Length: 146
Image (cartoon, rainbow, N blue to C red; front, side, top):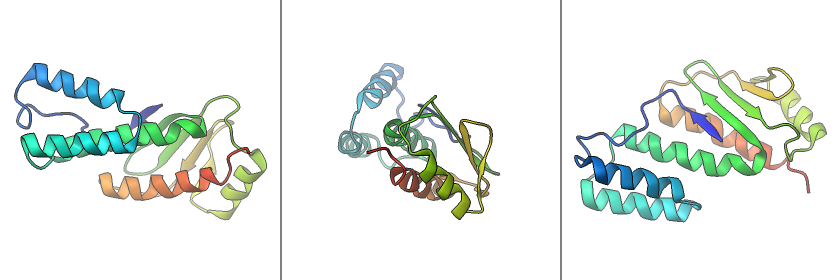
């Protein structure tokens, strides 16, 4: 799943000065398969380097979203200041009737082509974007095929 929050998502050299160490951390983060593994890694980074700057928080949030989006057949999630767009794979594991009901019940939800859901809510920072995305993912969970 491709995640684009339109915010810097990286380990700045001011946080972790050693380039080799940054590469190792990126690889370890990419290999996290559960939220618990990612949380353990976040605790380790805070212990080693101090509180996470915004770019590191965004990096971790992006990876967490990647893990959460996968079961819903989400190919791409793009969230910027005006809207959030979710693009699905062909034939996602979601009930189309439940999806249509979900869209009809929420005025901010719009279909943007056969495979895209657009949520028209403005957001200006990471917390606002996550506050839009996670409730949508909870709604998608209700649409999963049994």
